[in-house]
Amino acid sequence: MRSRLEQLKNEALLAIAAAKDTLQLTELENKLLGRNRGELNAVLKNLKNLATDAKKDIGAFANEVKNLVAAAFAKRHAEITSRDWAAGSENERLDISQPSLVPFSRGHLHPITLVQRDLEDLFRALGFMVLDGPELESDYYDFTALNFAADHPARDTMDTFYVKGHPDWLMRTHTSPMQVRALQKYGAPLAAIVPGKCFRNEATDARHEHTLYQLEGFMYDTDITFAHLKGVLEAVAKHLYGPETNMRFMPKFYPFVETGVSGEVTCFL
Image (tube, rainbow, N blue to C red; front, side):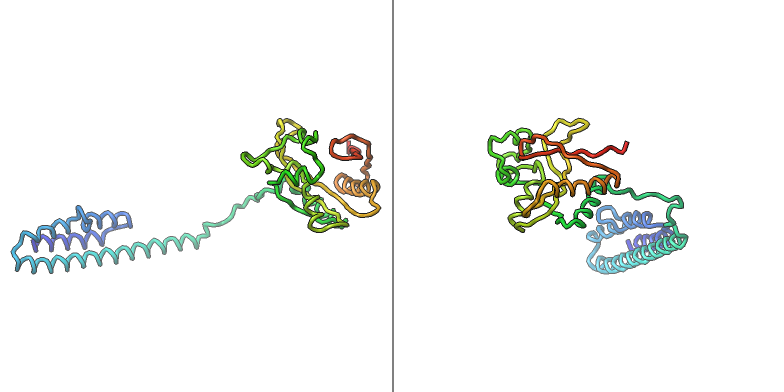
């Protein structure tokens, strides 16, 4: 048995020194020192068949061989790791991270975002606050507090998304709940806009979608007239479409306001 251990030691040291990479070294380590099928452990299992004196002598030698082989594995692992790291550093000195020589774009903001930010800047310059509100809203703020009675026809036309199991909660159908929230928080006088997403159960087509964007404005003060409203909207139209843009108001019935008007701007064509 001693001669077999000596043979295993010599063969192992030669094989370890010849290992070229981590994978090869790991396979060799499993072959020699593996718990179940390792050749060295297979020899050690036969120690129980030796006489007591021989068992003590061979056992000590076997542990010496095992520790020597394990140290050789550790040393070779370190050598290979160091070599591979040095090779990687050499590749980095070749500047493999050279960026593309062809200019490329990282994309851009969505047109809705661009227009929204542009209008926010305009309204701030006009003295308006820019407010943001919750998209998950209560029936009270979305309808009741805005004088939408339970049987108000506008409730039907908005095709609201209600939260299942919570009939008093919904995805806001307009940004108008912020009128109430803003007045509760800031009082009057007040001038503000509320840009943001709204949600309605629409049949999707070229003019309708279940998610839409609004930019709502409101002003509360004494002696405010339609002239102020038209003046602000004309400033918006000229800002968006050019200084030559003209605008007009026309009376129109809306089921949720009184009195109501619609606005039109001249077409650039």
